[in-house]
Amino acid sequence: MKCWGYNSYGQLGNETKTDSLTPVSVSGLSSGVNAVTTGDQHTCALTTGGGALCWGFNVQGPLGIGTTQPVSKPVDVVGLATGVRAISAGEVHTCAVMTNGGAKCWGWNYYGQVGNGTKTGISGGELISVNVSGLTAGVSGIGLGSAHTCAQLTNGGVNCWGFNVKGQLGDDTIVERLSPVCVVGFVCGVFVYLPSAIR
Image (cartoon, rainbow, N blue to C red; front, top):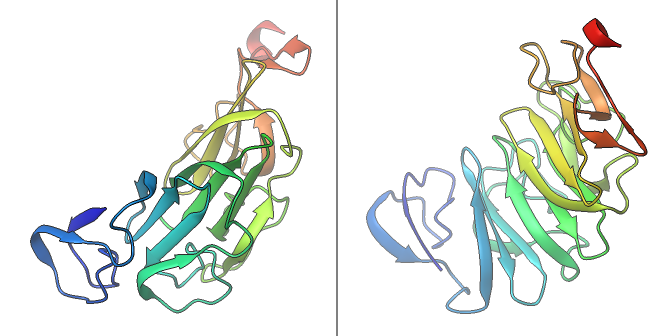
C-alpha cells in the first residue's frame, strides 16, 4: 500500500509527519491489503485476512485503538483483527461491516453518527468499536458522510443515522438520529416507509 499528500497527523502511515508529493510506502503493508478508506485526516485499511488497521488523526477516536493519540503507522483496531468485510471512513469517525452482516462504528459521536443510541460532547467519541443499534446482522454495505452514516441492508433497505439538519438521513425530517432510521421509499423490515405527505 502507498499513500501521498498532507501528513500532519501521520495519515500517510510512513512513520513521519512530512507531506509527500509522491507515493510513499505505508509501514508494514507491503502486501495483504484488500481495501483502503480515508477520512479527513485519518486512513484505514482492510487486510486480506479480514483485519482493520487505522492511522493518523485520532483526537475523537476514529482509529478505534482505545486512545486519542495520533499514530503515524498502521495499528490494529481494537477487537477487529479478523471478521471485517468492509470498512469506511467519515470525517472523524469510521465504520465496518462484519462478515456476519453486523455493523460497528467508532470515533466522533457528537451527532450520534456512531449509531449506538448515544452521543458525546463536541470533543468526545467512542474510542473502540461499538455495535450499531439494531444492525447486528443483515448489512451489506456502509457509507459515511461528515457527521452521518448510512447502511445498505441485504433486504434492499437503507438505514441512516447522525446529523440531519439538511435532511441528509432521508427520513422525512430534519431530526438528529442517534440510531438507525429507515430512509423513505426503501424497504425496512416488511414495509415500505413513505413520506408523511402521502401516508
